[in-house]
Amino acid sequence: MKKQFFNPTPKLASFFYSLNTHHREHHLYAHMLREDIATGIMPLGGRSRHHPNFAASIQGAENEINSARELIASFSERGARDLNEIISRAIEEIARALSWAPSSLYEIVNTQKSVSIHPVSSRRTFRLPFYTFQVIPRADQQTWRRKILHQSNRYIWSISIPKALGGAKGYRKMISRLEKIPPASTPQFVMQELENSVEPSIFDFNEYSALQKLYINKATSNWNWHRRDWSDDTQCEYYRTHKRSMFKYAQNLLREHIVSELNILLQRLDLNCTILISGLPSAAEILEGANDLHLGKINFEEMYKLVFD
Image (tube, rainbow, N blue to C red):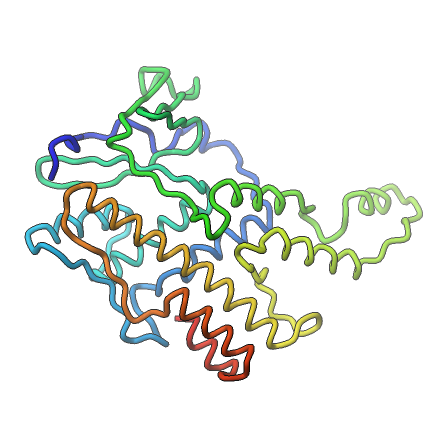
């Protein structure tokens, strides 16, 4: 491993206690989308029912595979049974981090015995050309005994939402749009009229619901998010299947991006290893399947078996 990556202890904070104690408002649709992005991006527990040949492996120099395995395992705090589960959990944790911080940072910690990765809080954190700085909240300054933390960017690994899914900027814009949706199914002005016993305005709840769905579909067009809607009242089976297939396509784009970035990280650390995922459909294969469904070459059941684990 290259000497310039020797960094025995993390210098940046993964979270700040004073900020974590503050209530973090969860907007319904934004929160649901974040959960759905990470859920199912890899087979649960490293096992796939519809794709029994799924395998996640690390290939390369035999004396460096163990170091790469330890690095990948450090992305998750949970234990794992085998390499399938180690890699699956790492990809899931990175996807979950990206769903909250579309440009996520990690600190590379390398001792003489092992190399690991530690998440860096995105809050009050600023990445400049050569250094990453964290401005410590006043309530945490006594714990850290300083006002600012800093680390050289040669010890920082960054990953962002891929451009094919709108990039970090597009993702933030999408979340911002979802957070503008009122938390209740009834607009606030109608609720106020009802609470004040005022004769309610002419208001069409069905039209409001339909417009809200259109708004969400437009806001999440890069991801083709389905809103967890399985109803039959406003969508046909083809639309429902197509919508879920295209969201899975977006998840696979993200998964392939994460694997690619992890492999670049391994090379950067001078670990001559490569992470390989086999037995799962690629993003291109899902897109081809969606086209075959449209042409009637495959049925709904075949499509679901293709896209779901």
